[in-house]
View (tube, rainbow, N blue to C red):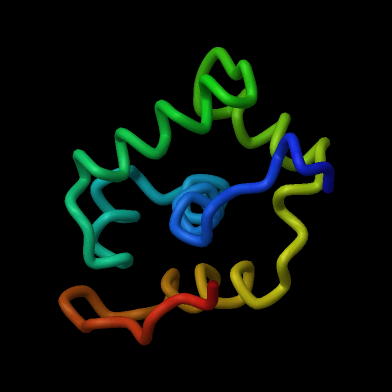
Length: 93
């Protein structure tokens, strides 16, 4: 991954949540942040990667190697089976 595509830990967490198919509201709930904050990160990511929409963002992110963190993939995968209303452990950075 080039320096051009380095992301903060929080933006990587948001990107992984989006890539796993969670809505922006769900991503915010799992990360303990406002969905408006998630929207801001999503807009920043789309602008930075020149993506037209969310599916395009995920495709570009995968192509440039931004979705290759097994710990984050596992953490978000575990969220799929988590009962609603339970607080998840913090995501890896």
